[in-house]
Amino acid sequence: MAATYEPIATTTVSGGSTNTINFTSIPATYTDLKLVITYALSGGSALFMTYNNNTSSIYSDTNLDGDGTSASSSRRTNQTKISILSNGTEVGFHQIDIFSYAGSTYKTCLVAQSLDGSQNYVRRQVGLAQTTSAISSIKFELGNPEYFTAGSTATLFGILKA
Image (cartoon, rainbow, N blue to C red; front, side, top):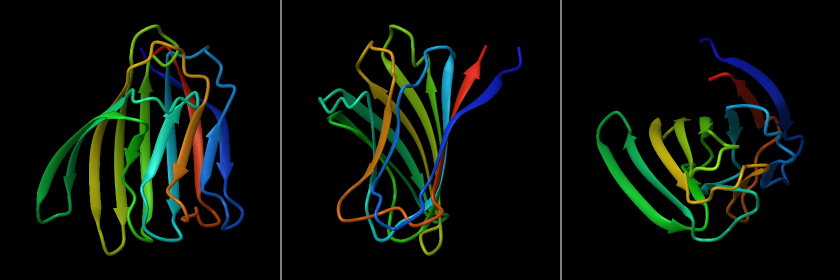
């Protein structure tokens, strides 16, 4: 069965003083969610993601990284947020699929990340939030004092009948 993507919300950064992007009041009417983020940063930092403003130690992630020369992997558990790779002032592109976000099981996501510039870096990541609560908000936050540059965009899609 073909999936239908419906845009729920888009945020475009207009200035250089924003270090968070929030999606709130996410309706529970879809089977899955997809986020597409394109950005440039004011400096080197990590991009963090949390659900429902929950910063308890419920998050974990497993990563596979590559730069065209070498590959590596890592795993983190009992984290207060999912750390999504960002580095330097590179241009970044992320696609994040969040599965069964309104269901009563733990929340899993698949992240495809690419950085373009001097890093030329890719990461594939699986994230887990040990919560059975429906996701009604998603927050992306950069480590201080970094900011999204003007023109950075994040779009949240709802997926029907996945």
